[in-house]
Image 1 (tube, rainbow, N blue to C red):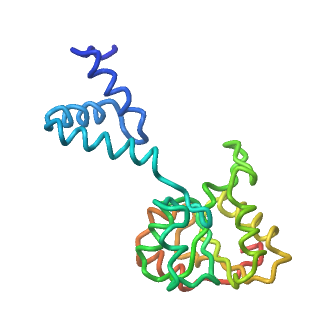
Image 2: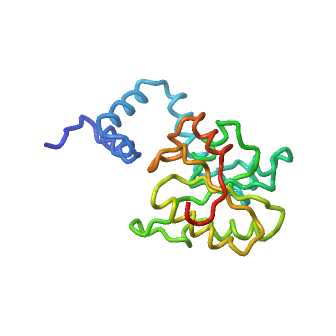
Amino acid sequence: MNQQYPSALLEKAVNEFAKLPGIGRKTAMRLVLHLLRQDETTVESFAHALTTLKHEVKYCKVCHNISDTDVCRLCSNPQRDASTICVVENIQDVMAVENTQQFRGLYHVLGGVISPMDGIGPSDLEIESLVKRVEAGGVKEVILALSSTMEGDTTNFYIFRKLAKCNVKLSIIARGISIGDELEYTDEVTLGRSIVNRTPFNGTN
């Protein structure tokens, strides 16, 4: 039975919130009613933050992390070790690794992992730009910090093959992270140890 709404405007707002990941219609209704109870300035500030984010946010032209400028604060920080690149799947993973305070190098955000079942191939990811960064020189080590899944392992191996001719050390984070776990949901201590205790990657581990 379809829920009856007292207002078409309310229904439209609930429909929009329900499109967000992990938000069902009941949660969407609670969020909409919460906003409706707030004063006009609060709601306008909320809406403005979203529209400003969409219109003005940038992606770092070096590592593809979210940024307010063309080059993100990490890539432009002279205190970071530019000779070490940590390859991650998404922006949340950058935040997860940074929270461990165990890594002082730079990042490269792929924007996903190779997943034929989902129609995602190497050309859909930022793999070629990674290869170009390494080929440009100055990079001594590439750390593969992708999720311990079949898709993550497939992507690791593809990158390993693409960088095989480059004079660069390839490492993989230690398997303190359970098979199938995603980086962003791993506790900081375990993730930090996995970064510190990384091991050489030879295409099979």
